[in-house]
Length: 259
Image (cartoon, rainbow, N blue to C red):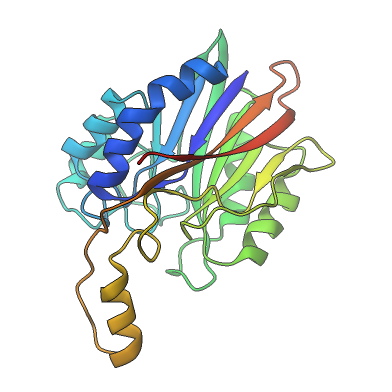
C-alpha cells in the first residue's frame, strides 16, 4: 500500500498547487491513499467547509488539522458531518468530530489519527496517553495506522515516534511548515519524518508575507498576517506499507516546484 502525505496547505496558493499537482502525483507514484493537513488552508489560518470540499474534490482522501482547527466558527458543525475531516484526538472531551477515522483502501482498513503536541503549543490532553487509549480501540480494527503529529518541538515529535514504533505504520510531523531531511524507518517498522513541510509560497516566511513577519520581529507589535503569493512548492512524503503486518517499508520525500 502506498500513502501520500501532503504537508500543511497554506491558503489559496496552497490549494491551487494541490489542485494542479495532486492528480499527476497520485498517478505517477501509484498512490492508494492521500492525506493532507488542511488547518491553514483558509486564508492561512483555519479551515472552512468550502475549503475542505475544495481539497477533497482535488483528490485528497483525508484532511487532518491541528491547533488552528477551530479558528473558523463555521467548521464546528461541518466537521461532525464530514467523515473525511479530522481534528486532533487529544482535544478535551466535548469537542466536535471523531478521534480517528477509518478508510477502506485496497480491501484493507486504514486508520488515520491526528494529534497535537504540547511543547510551545496549547495545553491539550497528553498525546502519548491519548494514543495508548486509541490503540486499544483500533487493535480489533486494523494494524495499518497513520499518525499526523502536529507539533512545534522536534524532541516531542521524535519522542512520540519512538513511543509508537512498531505500534503504528507511520508518524508524520506537521505544523512548522519546513520540510526536514530525517525521514527514516524506525526499528519496529514505523515510518517517521519530523515535518513533511508545506504547500504554498516559498517567497515567504512559512507561507506568510515576509515583509509582515519582518516588521513584527523589528517592532514587536501585533500585526495581521497575509498569505504570501509568488513561487509555490508542494512538500510531501510517500510511504510504502506492508498490508500484512502494518510495517512501513520505505518513506520518500517529495518537493515539487509549481511555478
